Image: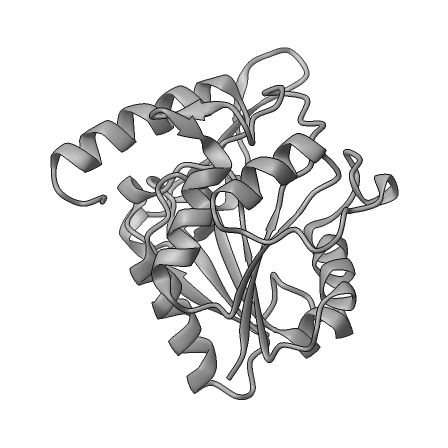
Amino acid sequence: MSCVAIIPARGGSKRIPRKNLKPFDGVPMIVRSICTALDSQLFDQVVVSTDDEEIAGVARAHGAQVPFMRPASLADDFTSTAAVMVHALNELAAFDYACCLYATAPLLQARFLRQGFELLEQHADKSFAFSVAGFGFPVQRALTLDEHGALTSLYPEFRNTRSQDLAEAFQDAGQFYWGRSEAWLRGDVLFSPASLPVILPRHLVQDIDTLEDWKRAEYLYVALKAGGELQ
């Protein structure tokens, strides 16, 4: 089976400017994802999809391939990950499996990438397998603010339900998305019964969209390395 890793990395990040190149523990953030993909030995190619020449240069210098530049029309704030994957797969030679691997996933571990691939390979009727983590508190007991700024139950029907009686819910861990190439190209829905979960421990997950997220990821990274949970 042939596999490709595709790392989306546009140059125009707004909330954290140039976040794909921002140093994380001494190296550009994207380098951590590239190295994890290469070290996993799962992929025939590790490809970075970018519209930015500086990102392309860093990617090539650290072992990834940049065989095409992504058009500006697929590098704005509204472009979906699925659209980037379809574009990349149409630009590349045919692969059986394609894994979208986020550039800002410094806690990513090769063992979970392998787990995702093996899980999808074992279930021929499924399209995707991707990383998720459980919420730290039942989502059915979530609170929101009303028009006066006061707290109210988001799901009032569960206000008095015991937490142990509520169904467990999961969030997208924002690390990787394995898919059959034909499923990406066909437009199968990722968040659907076509997908399988690779459930990660909550303490190994931090999506990075804001500076607060970044700081939390740095703290986690240091702690996990000190505890021997991260190489």
